[in-house]
Image 1 (tube, rainbow, N blue to C red):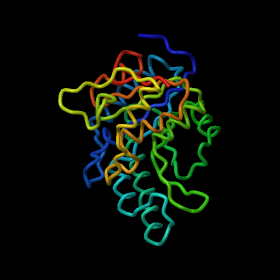
Image 2 (tube, rainbow, N blue to C red; image 1 turned 90 degrees about the vertical axis):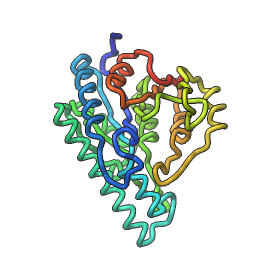
Image 3 (tube, helix red, strand yellow; image 1 turned 90 degrees about the horizontal axis):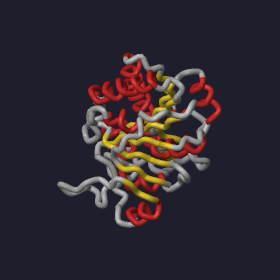
Length: 262
């Protein structure tokens, strides 16, 4: 197991596809998967107590369908949109509370921060929480533009903002697929790419359509990869977080998923 630098800040994003039943109309957390992630995270913090973790989570079934239903993407807020905006924020708060309960039961000092209420990037406040000993938990959420239009703050975007702010060398994305493929959705038998450099990533994005629908209003894998191009001198690991032991492998720098060198 490789030694980790002192006070390293780790940005870890849990995809909505692995922690919720994303295509379901029910607001349910996949408790078994989240418990497994919490267990592995607890073991990691025990082994590397000086590492600091910022935990992010996607919206999954708690957010995307509502944004789609109320047509909240960059729309003027009318009466119906105001109601939908509030409902989405409330749903995301509920999701964060459910996740927090599971992590707390595994003795992890999670402190949920409501993204829509924070003056992001309020790095100083997050830093204060982080170095007090907490694990900040932020999720995809809604915000307002200066023109008072609704905008989605994706957890992918948060990961990029916070990785820049905290100068973290690695960002981890737990998804429901084994990594990045040449084609999405991947065909049967195809294997995830083991490594991607910026030039190859740009070429790949030309072939990937940003699929926005009621289950993912942020463009799926294509939207995620497009957002990552904003990073420089970073390493992003995208892997299947549903599998037991995968998070431990990723955090201890063992080969898993797709490494993106930016």
